[in-house]
Length: 318
Image (cartoon, rainbow, N blue to C red):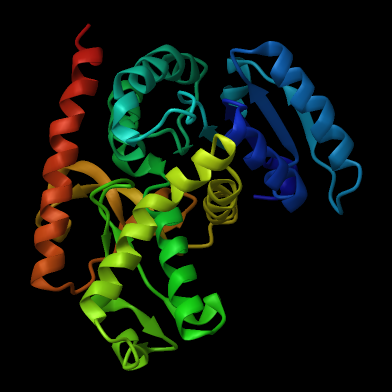
C-alpha cells in the first residue's frame, strides 16, 4: 500500500482522539484523516487546528470533518470515544455507557461497507473490544484493542529508572486487564536479555519492591487524571504504534487486547497479551512461559473480565 491509499477515520475527538490525531498528522503515515465526533463544533475546530499543524510537517495530511460514509474506503478505523475520565476511579464503571456508544456507532461503520481493522482505546478496552466484535460481526483478529500496551510502557519506564538505563534496552510485559487486575510479568523482565533479578541485588525487600511497582503501574493513570482530568499523550503514541504496524504491515509484536481461544489457558474474551500486529490486525498471539503465581493472577483477571462483560451483554440484549 502506498501513502496515497492510507486513509484513517477517527471516531471520537476528545482528549485521547485529538492527541492521537496530532500524533498521526506529525507521523505522516496517513494521506487523509477524517474526524467524526458527536460534537461537530469540536470536530471542526480540531480539523482546522490540525490542518495548521499539517502545514509544518514533512508529509502533509489532509484532515477533514468526516462522516460514516468515509469508512467505505478507509484503511483503518480508530475508536477513541468514551465517558469523561475526570471522575474515573475504575475503568469498569463505564461499561454500559461505552457499550451503548458502540451500539450507536459501529453499525454505521459496517453499513458503509467497512470490513477492515478496528483499532480502539475506548475503556474498559478489554470488555469493549468484545462488544465491538459482537456488534460488528468482524473476525476476532480485526478488532485490535490497545490492551496493556500503555501499562507495559509504564512497567518499562519504572524498570529503566531503577536500573538507570535506556528504556529501549528493557524487555518487560504486563498482561491481563488494562486496569486493576493487570499482571506485571517479573518472570519475563529482562535488561538486554539479562534477568531483571540480576539488577535488584541492592533492593532490601525485593517482593515489596515488585508489588510497589505493580501498584504504580495500575495507579499512574489515576494520578494523571487527578492532576489534569485525563490521560491522553501516552495512549496516543501507543495507538500510533498500532497504526504504523497495521498500515505498514510491520508484523510487530505489541501488547494488545486480543481474543483468546485457549491461549494462556483461557478463551472467549479479549485481554492484554503480546501479539503480532500487521495488515490483518492481530495475526498471532505469542504465548510466553509465565510463573505459576502469574498464571493464577492472569486467570483471576480473565474471570473478572468475564463477569464484567455481563454488564455489556445487558446493553446488547436491550
